[in-house]
Length: 302
Image (tube, rainbow, N blue to C red; front, side):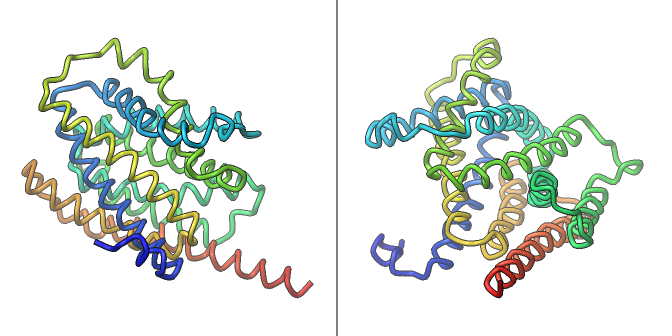
């Protein structure tokens, strides 16, 4: 355990890597809790509980900071993100409930590729060769894992692919939101605005949890919240190209947990498919970092 003073004394990039590592671990453990809870409860109920408990956990922060901290000029962006996060959550949780954890985790790594593509289109930038290459590598990896025509492609797989696009868009929006608003505000709105969307379907599919279920639900909500907090703060401290390699450790962790807890034996196709997806994902981040550095150098020269 690193003491707070020792942690703050570390270089900024090191702190960012530590936070992203914690985010990866929290994500992998969140997948496990979703898988376990989905055997008893509807995904609609789980998404509602995630939004409700995440919001409740952040209420003390809001009380200390004051409601005024929530003032923003980006209300439309927050609303758009709430819709795509809610629909993405439903598809993601359904995929985790029915797919091997390792496969769902590997496909989720397409999100950074779609984030870069969406940001480029949003900022009206040209889709250059590096962006297209990253996208093609990622999609090739997805085809290797899914193997359409050789293996059955179910609704869960389609839902997981939608999730990667939806969360890619949500991540792009989050990056834009953090330019003006505090990271805590950005995280709070993600949960608080999802709650009214999730409330109706969640209550309709409600099943009373037992005491032991509440313990697992609490772990699910806390892990889900802190996976977002750790990631948001890591990206606020350092470029994605610096911290994302540690984020990929959730794949072997998810595969190991899936094997030990749910007897899910990963197929051999996962290895080359994941390698292509992770390669495409990291290549997109690396090429974007180079573009930003080149632009900064040009700006300094002028």
